[in-house]
Image 1 (cartoon, rainbow, N blue to C red):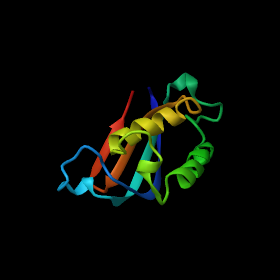
Image 2: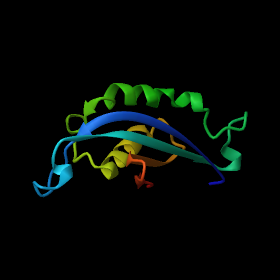
Image 3: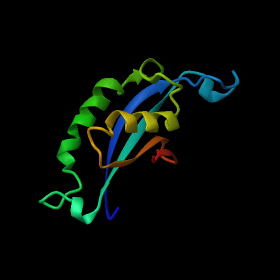
Image 4: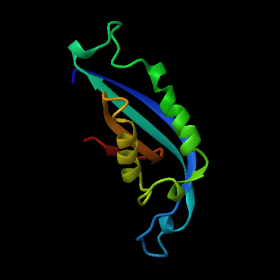
Length: 120
């Protein structure tokens, strides 16, 4: 792909990861200030007549979904599988890739120094 755009979304939520030793810090319920970054891409010929991969304003539906479904929620109650950053990245991609076929990657950060990325 020739062109790539990204947009970041932020929210706060809690989770508890199953399958870890009881003494592991992530086995206990805890929270993060998450950042989700969406990457969309297009070739030259696929740009809109204006020259966009996608108008950033159209991504407001994702922001509204994040605010309603994820912000200040317990992610174990929201997601069907263990709410790791990796699983969340794949889940967000699968949730939105049909509506936004330009979506090429979803990145999820739980801390300023860590990222998980799903790129099919």
